[in-house]
Length: 84
Image 1 (cartoon, helix red, strand yellow):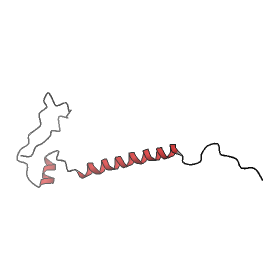
Image 2 (tube, one colour):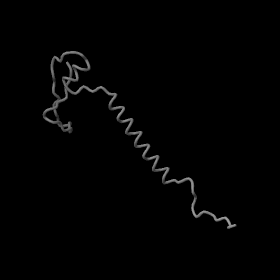
Image 3 (cartoon, one colour):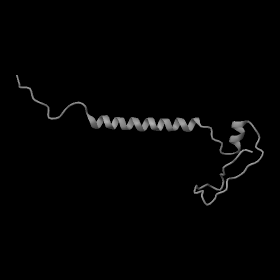
């Protein structure tokens, strides 16, 4: 019989693997929550959305004006709409 040998490094727990799996799972859960929240919110962006969500006709459209404090970039074809 051979004498017992001590292992050079521990076999368990494998900390880098545990950290990597935890990181991947955390990113996956975070992305899942983000998608679920985005899909659950009803956002009205244009006249067609108003008709679909409220089942009402649009009486007027008021485009949002860009001011000195508004640094968001908007395309010329899409404007924020307020239902009046």
